[in-house]
Image (cartoon, rainbow, N blue to C red):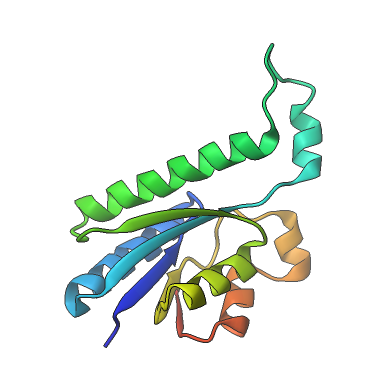
Length: 145
């Protein structure tokens, strides 16, 4: 049935619910599990943090990447404790929906399992949710949890 399942995670409870479903599917089908976290640089966010930086300011992209790595590692640990075998966590930078679809194509994922509501911004209400964009552009099936 499925050979490679991709789960994008953002640290939200819905993403972990999607991960649980993906782990269950992997256990049933023997599919590989990839976990993807994508962070996106937001200049407005950087501007707000620039007022409260400590003595040694670090680039915002570095801080966001570190957080994305933590989210990915937490999801990987969650998957392992839920019974996944050898899940792999990846971190990318860029537009989220496009990054998910590109990663799925690049890694030959044959199913994307993702939460319907994550930690998106107000921008999602105006431009459409990430899950909506992924379902509209992905070449493989997408399961929204």
